[in-house]
Every structure is written in C-alpha cells, then in structure tokens.
View: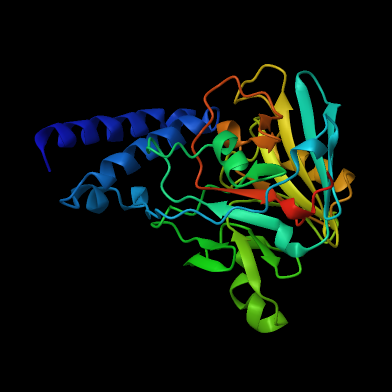
Length: 327
C-alpha cells in the first residue's frame, strides 16, 4: 500500500473514532465515513485495509437487473396511475410540526409486477446509482429505495433479489422480510426461522431484505428494541413498505417540509403509522438521504440535501405491453 493511502486510512480511522459520540444524533455521519473506507478498500491491492478494518469490505456486483415493462405515459396523473394491471394512488398527509407523510397505495394483478433492482457497488461510482435515475431506467410506475445492505459482505446478510441469492447468512440482531412467489410478505424477528422458510412452507423466496426493523407483524405493531441498529429512536426521514392484502401494498416516506435528513420520525412512530394504514406486515427500509420515492420520473419527497447512492430499489411495474396501449 502506498504511503499516501496509509496516511489517508489513518486519518479516516481517527475521524470514525472521534465521531462515535455523535452517532445517535447524527448516524449518517458514521455511515458516510464507512462508505469512504469502502472506496479505499476497493483500491487497496495489498489487502491491508481488509485486515485492519474487515467490516468495511464490500461485494462488487457490476451487472444490473432487467427493467420492467414500459408504462403508458398518457396514464400518469398527479394523483396516480391506472391501467388493466396496476393501480397507484398518491396521497400526502400532514403530521406534527414539519412532518409530511408521502403515501403510495398500490394494487397489482400479478406478483411479478412487484420487482426489485440490484445495482451492486455504489459510492462515488461512475454509474451514479440514485433512485432518481434508476426508477425511470427500470420503467417503474412507482419506486422506493431498498435496504442498501446487499454489498456489505463482511456483515451477516440475507439478501435475495428477483430469485437470485446474493448473500445467505443470518444476523440474529436483525429482522428479515421475505417476499414469496405470490407477492406475500413474511417478517422474521431477529431472523428466527428465515433460513428454513422455503423448506418449512414450500414457498419460493423471490426477494429478501435484512435491514429493518420489522414494523408490523400479523397486523400487530412490533416493539422495537433500543439496541436495534439504524438509530431507532432518532427522528429522521424514514422509508417503509407494507402489505395490506393479497397483491395490495403501501409505500411510505416520512418526509419533512425542510428537506433535512435529520427531521422525521422514530421507528416506533413509523410502525404505528403503518398499522394505522391497515398493514398486516410492514418493514422499515433505509432512511435519511437514502429515503426516496419516485413516480413518473419525479421525486415525491423533499430532498434538498444530497441524494445518496444506493445498491437497490423496490418498484412496481405495469404488465400491459406497449402494443396493447389504447390509441
């Protein structure tokens, strides 16, 4: 390893240590510093950084997912989108102080319309993997960020995207969301039972997320532990997805009027809101500057700060091919 890289590594490590006391009040600061370390790791041919800080290791996946079917531009309105295969209704609700709830109600005809896109390495890459760019590229009618967990090879992760197993290691401190071949949600507290789900039920795991926490399970609000990662008791923008009924879902962003990445809700507040919306299962996704909802090429939430690169997203696509559009 060249001397300048060693010096930079030492400075970044020192910054992480000094920033630790502020982790609860500004969790994104430590997260962003970790991504900087990941970039240095990728350029480190000696392996010294991997030895010194193994938690910064990253799995690089270059390929991108297959896009969904192109939606009919004429069917987009300010309130939503509807064709013979999908119905999206948009809603905004004011909360306390500067809080705004961005809500998208989604009904689809086939579970294949609930899709994910995986993009692998993200930070400071040439591909600029931001939801604002990726959603139109994947022909999403409506899209929301995923869990941004797929590339962290050093952490025990249970990651499946569109039937492809990316990682399959349990972390008993994290909750898992599994989406099966029917488009149904299954949440597993502390990962318990996730590894034997397919064997026990005969279902196929199409998508699996390991970020969390689980917010609603079997229509009941989950009591979230203070020790759960991702600053559960901090108030910041949050993203969540929930299942209401068979092939019926809701996407939610806890937004604010200021565009700040530090004003929003706690995980427990988000869980209560998802239950109030009627979710029988609901799951927290990546938050802060990663929390983005895209519709018809437009970002629905306020994002005055820098939108973060992500590893993946969840989106809903139409099943009506362009040749069947009404003229």
